[in-house]
Length: 496
Image (cartoon, rainbow, N blue to C red; front, side, top):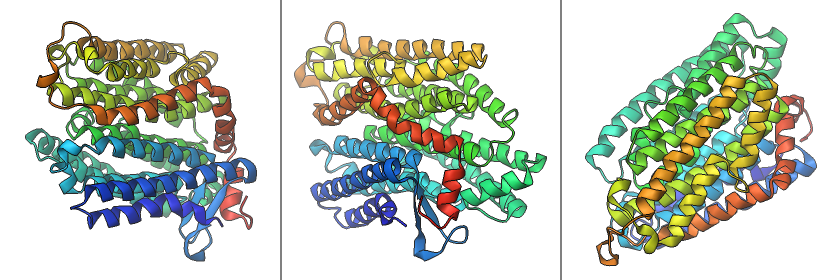
């Protein structure tokens, strides 16, 4: 057993509880949050190194062996996703620190709630059983419910009703699917479920249950059932929107990736075909939404939907090349969505409006923000040497090799449409005759520079160092395609 697995969950949780009592001292809240996340970052990096050299790491809480107790499992997939999530949380906390707004959202427990959301995300990546996946989903959602309403504006309250209602329905269906699965197989441990499904054969009933899970996670990931996302993701403060865009939908994607490689991989003609079809439709509709809006928040939110469809296209093809591309692109998308939402939030804060046609000429006063925004748009489009290129090429190549020509064309075309939608924002906001002078700007936007530079460097690093990145991703994909090592590590006597 490896006690490091609890660290990325426990440290942010303790810091969140401590920050609640530091309401009057936002600097101390930030310091506690950053310290806990740096500790979680070190733990995630150590786990990834152990995965590479010693295999999958497990922790049986309370000494109760699987499948009877609560088990945390860190394979390379989980470790790398936790590592990316913690880096993004650090950047969002840095961006949320705005000395001009210390009497605003910080009074309403912004930092504790962001940390609690990170706890839920990390727990979702590390849990080894489906019921605790549900529990960590709910921890994430509870934090997001409150974060969405911070500020109490009319738009936020309206969107929060829709967001809470949709997620309550999805969570109810989740519990029903878990109950059906337990009644059929008598266990909820993922490794044990993998064995039981293989022994029983993925019958019609089990395939139906798997489709029920697919609907649940598709709703949470905004795959096809995305109608709820643009409003809630464009309503809260910019730092919260960045955290939502980078992490929330990715938990749903991870759940699909884990369950349909570890457990429900026996009927790809049904489940994976459905994924590819849903991914294609999501890409198309996301692209149409991105080009049809003139507000920065809405354009960025629709780009989240588009990228979800592309990742699920890669997962649905389910070979080594496509899963490698999907995993690399998933990490890339976490980084770039946080990056561009932070920069977009800075633009809106400076101009006092999210209508890019009413801004113009910001490049004169904030050139660093402008050029970083353009680089982020290029990364999302998959322009080398930025981070989106490798994953996109691997997915499209796999699609062509498997004969998914139409979906591959959709993926390529919608990538260009995504770039066009973001280029509109760049040209409209930063280019042209300046409409605002220095004294008329509503904020400085300087709090976006440091996290923007960190995420920019990370995007370049993932792109230029793609060979190094693939060395770490390959063990993750190997475990996804060959789950016997995962099962042995959880249910066997050794730690693997």
